[in-house]
Length: 279
Image (cartoon, rainbow, N blue to C red; front, side, top):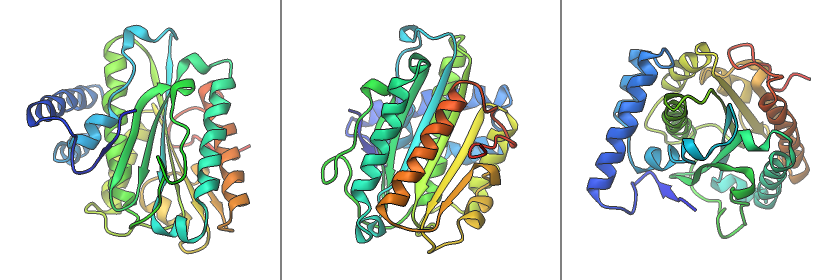
């Protein structure tokens, strides 16, 4: 299991520097190929710490048997309100349901999953792995809620990692689509970067028609449609569960699971009009 937080890797500075240079080179190629604008590329250039490097890791291209790949980046809120609402077990159950759905799909060899959790710091549980090998979270071990909701920072870092790994696969000749799914029960608290930075990056990624960006808001503490719109996530890719209870969380993961499998089958096209949660 690869685990990192936004304070950097446990490795030495040279490894961190070489990893940052490699990710920066992948972002530069993504800009040349139109995935990123110069503005978004500049935004990402200042934040290539250990977390983005860990998030950009994954299977070697030569070990992937599928002719094309769908990358799932699952970004799960682990802030204190999740604990206060006693939703930790529901999140863990939902994440397992999602991974099991991929593992049981006929397209499973073409799906790779990266897993992030976030609170005051974000954690890369692992980079891009087959669903069979992905971590099933456990309450109190690999998933422990507490701290603030650094939503914007985590979204940008997770997308930065995804862009880099996807570009690595494309450089090796593997066509790639990406799905980034955020699940949260609150709006941002304490991020260094604003919603408008998320929106600019989201606009670029959606314009490339290689990305689906999806947002799940649980509860009524925030206007999640407004939060998602401020981050640049299309309305058809936003799901709001008004009740912040375990059954609502599990139901949300079931919808994410069905939609993500449909997208991996090519039945939902990436881009602004993706309609991820549209029946």
